[in-house]
Each structure stands twice: as C-alpha cells, then as structure tokens.
Image 1 (spheres, helix red, strand yellow):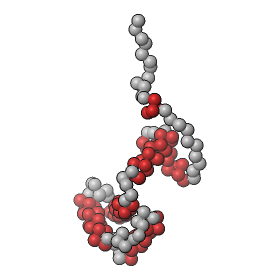
Image 2 (cartoon, rainbow, N blue to C red; image 1 turned 60 degrees about the vertical axis):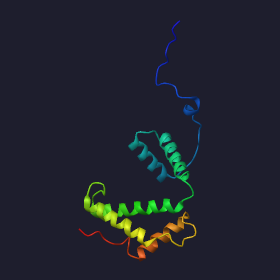
Image 3 (tube, rainbow, N blue to C red; image 1 turned 45 degrees about the vertical axis):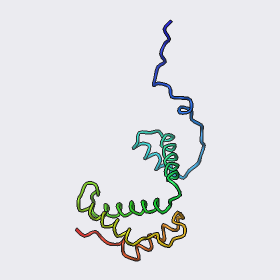
Length: 144
C-alpha cells in the first residue's frame, strides 16, 4: 500500500520546529522598530523578535571582547556621520570611502579605549565619544 504524502513544506525535526511562547512587554518605540524591521525583512513580528534575540546571543558568543564590540560601534557612528554629511554611501562613492578610511585611521591612532578599565560598560562609550569630540575627531566636517 502506498502512503499518502502530507501537504505543505517538509517537516522539520521536532527540535527545529517546536516554538515556545515568550510573553513580554516593551515600549512603543521598540515595538514600532520591530514592526518596521519585520516589514522590511518579510518576517512576522514574532519571527523578527526571535531573530534579533538570537543575533544578540551570537554577538555575545564572540567572547568577552567589549572593546572590539564598542570599536565596531564607533566605526559605525563614524560611517553614519560621514554618509550624512556627503549624502552618499561609502560603498558607492570613492570620496566618501576615502573619508571613512581616514576616519578609521584617525580613530585607531587616537587609541580611544586605552586606559579604560571596562570598555563594555555603557558609560565607557560615552567617555570614548567625549574624548574623540574633544580631540575634534568627530566634529570635523567633511570637505567637498
């Protein structure tokens, strides 16, 4: 006797398919950001929330290197500031790319995390940005 195939997508293993409820409350701002991200990605709100929580664990699993994480954040801030100033993406415009490259070199030369006891602490990032602002590294206008 021939068995009938079930309809729909192939079944995942029980561990992969099973989802467990997680009830939570959040601010309107976070919910709106999650909804916008879900819309953009094509995921449901629940899928987007699960995806983002999962990503946070992936980042945490990189190890206890808060200095690396905060340096990446600082680079992202620099890229954003430069792109806002030039109106172009660093991946699309050579001059913007050169400005980003110069900003990275300046940030690295300034060694903004030197001497901080706990670079993972949120207030450490504020101190780093303050140091760079005092040195004029984040307040330079991109010249065109």
